[in-house]
Length: 226
Image (cartoon, rainbow, N blue to C red; front, side):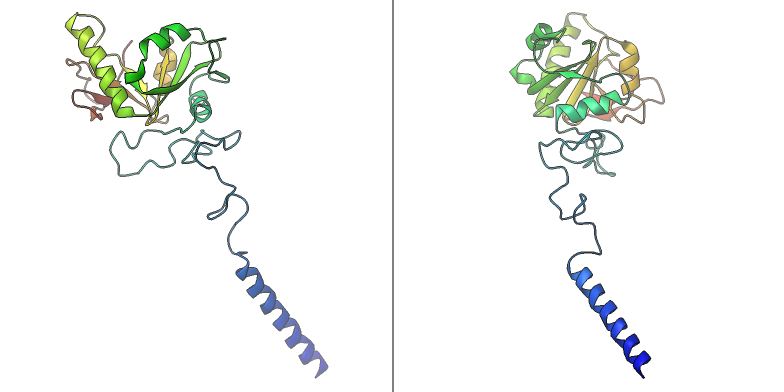
């Protein structure tokens, strides 16, 4: 009789412990960045060493976290949120270990400031390592595309520039490099970036993408030739 009573008491204690654990949220991870926690990456924050990489594609401050699977070509592009996240993402495909956002150590500072005026909606610019690759954070990508199209239209009228070149873009950042190998790496399918081409005579070879951009007269493509 005593043995049966002891077993009943032990069983009741186990049930009580389970109910208490469930009431406290023990069934879900509430402390390690789980749903409903306040330890995950927030808007405008830095989510750690792996933020902005394929290993940590967070929505705000990471890359591609809010890209809809059934969205347009533009909506599926990577979105960074911060220049730190964009730099880490770029470093996954071409060297961008360190990012410089001040004139000191920025090889093309004057050239980039002169080129990307207020109408381009550039809110922050950074230079990777030795300066061959640069990243530009964009506030309004439609405004950026419109400004870029105007520039290309002027060059085309003067027979300047090439119809097969363009700037590599994500949803809220663009990347440019003087190294053709870097630009090619950023257009690999696993990177998910595309080239914005606004040349009126652009026609990619068969098999390459040609998707609508945010402004008429521009397209998004995975084809680019230096």
